[in-house]
Image 1 (cartoon, helix red, strand yellow):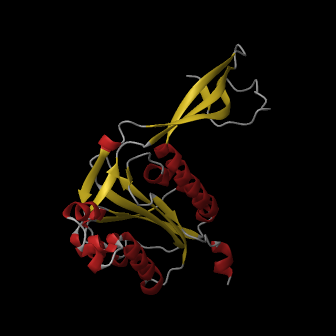
Image 2 (cartoon, one colour; image 1 turned 90 degrees about the horizontal axis):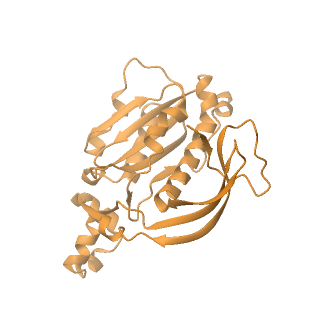
Image 3 (cartoon, helix red, strand yellow; image 1 turned 45 degrees about the vertical axis):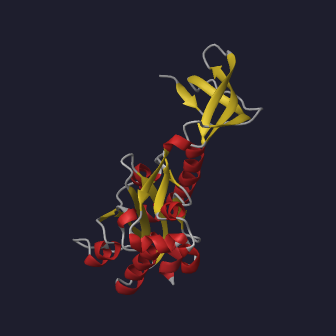
Length: 264
């Protein structure tokens, strides 16, 4: 199979004769089109009652004035199973063997573009902590919070609880974290959270790191092993469904350098 380089490298790019296969370059914007399947692909998942008021962001008096239809909109998680926009790009394709240039069109969509931003954040997180993990300065723990629409609390509150358990109950310093919000094809929304802390050794996962009572649904916890980027990609690099008015990922405002803190 021919090797394909899909990232543009400029108008004056030099095609290396050492690269075999097909070379794509000089991507340029052509047009953006609306996906006719977008509206038909919108589905809803009811929210647990304790999450409704948290997500409504409106006062109780105003809520009483809403129509039944408006309340239904507020009381559900609305999911986009189809991208809203397609982006059409022109590019040049060069056959390395013959040197023939052909102008072609590449079609992307808003799902893939949003996912690219998430992957960029993941690369930033892994770039910071992979060297420290390799030198055994830090431990990385991956948490999974299932069925977010049936949880007892919001993920924002859950994140604060997780921080408290690590730093106050276990005495571990959190250097940084990254999370992703996923919706499976079966419409099961869930969160993955990876936390970097100073290295610690246990034979068994401590009960302080199991949050089923706090979350109200099944949770999972495991240590990240070997290469961080490869391990987390299966959770953070998926191009899946999206929810209205919900972020698909988040990362620490500051990624702290573990080595400097360990010296202090």
